[in-house]
Image (cartoon, rainbow, N blue to C red):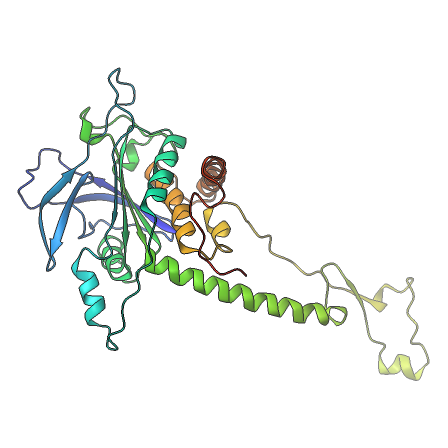
Amino acid sequence: VSSTITNHHQASLSSSSTMSHIFSSVTTSSFAYSPSPPALFVPIGWRRKTTNRHYQSITTRLFGCNPNSPNAQLPGEILLEDDRLNNDHYDEDRNNNSNNNPINVLPINLSALRQTIEHTRQIIGYPTYDISVSLITDSQMREINSISRGIDAPTDVLSFCFQDEDDMIEPGVLGAVQFDTPDFYNLGDVLIDVDYVQRRCEEDRKMHLEQLAKEKDEESDRKSGLVEGEVVMEEPTIQQLQNGDNEQTDDNEEDYEYIEIEVEEYDDRGVAPQMQHIYDPEIRIHMLLVHGMLHLVGYDHIEDDDYELMVVREDEVLAELRRRLGDNFGVTSKALPE
């Protein structure tokens, strides 16, 4: 589903200078490692605008605060942007549209998404930390994924951690910040490719309809098929038929063939399997946000033990969000029914 990238930066860099990025590690979730930074970003907590593929000066700076400070101001900042139309990638997509058809951009309820970000940040225990979330296109994600992970293809979500992985105490528990200054109380950035999410919704719906049709066909032929654990009687041999010995008894074990069919157990825990039967891309974006934000606080799923921790936490966060915001996280579903 996503990737987590850990970033270091120097807080003293000038806002008018060209920013350099130093990425120490990348953790995976669709998911992998790369030392290179994404071209779209300056150090975490800073944002900038783009014109003709040239990045200009910083326009926004986020400030979090120490949650243990007696003067802590709750909550931290949330920088939520729909970057799909505000850059040259959209111009490229439009110019490459040979039929001159209008490019449909899925409208996203940013107010509902902001609520999910705010509540998720509370649930995972870092309400005073800043966070940046960007909705982007296939072309944007492909460029960032190529530069940061060496994968020349889009993916659904990327998470760029602010804190060094080595400084995290355990999954879900961040270590002390490197410097006790406001701009270091930052979770990081989450990028979600809306185009990719839309496409997967359509693909999953089509796949499930095909599976349903196949299951109906299999049900009609079930009596002639194999069932898990079924004991299948051997056909009598030609010699047995000639001898009239075609009756098989329990006393002769050779008359039976025991066939054991192994069925792989399906794991329905976590964000990924729960999304498969949700065909509204906007609802999926809220679920991917949970996945991405858990990466920001050290959760991962490369190793089996880490996977167990992450899917359990995903289910807990999703359940609490649904309790607070409703089953669809405050989104009015626009998806077609199954």
